[in-house]
Image (cartoon, rainbow, N blue to C red; front, side, top):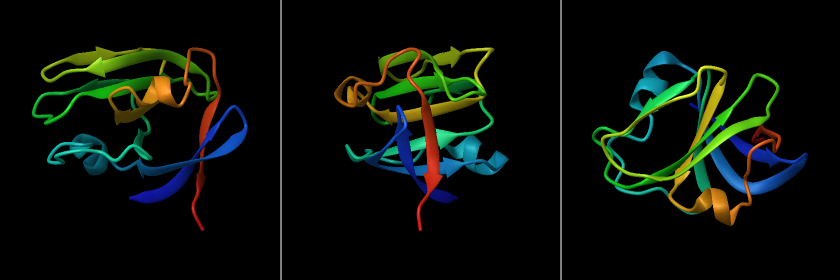
Length: 116
């Protein structure tokens, strides 16, 4: 799994990302974790649908198009849910309420930059 920093509205943030771009990594996602730190998130690519079956904690889910624009933000998604956004190319998963804390909203630009 790659490690990166989140770029939000063109500015590098303190948010540490794990980039899941392999099929096994994407299938596993956040399953098996008991929590996610406030300054961490998971970027799934390619991805346009996620589920929270088996999750131990609620998450925020952000769907992103191929140009890096936020299409939808789902806040505080509980267990046993399925979310789909057909136009999405990537999904950002973070702990519940982080999208609001990080001021992530529809039409924002998001990307990642590999950590050195």
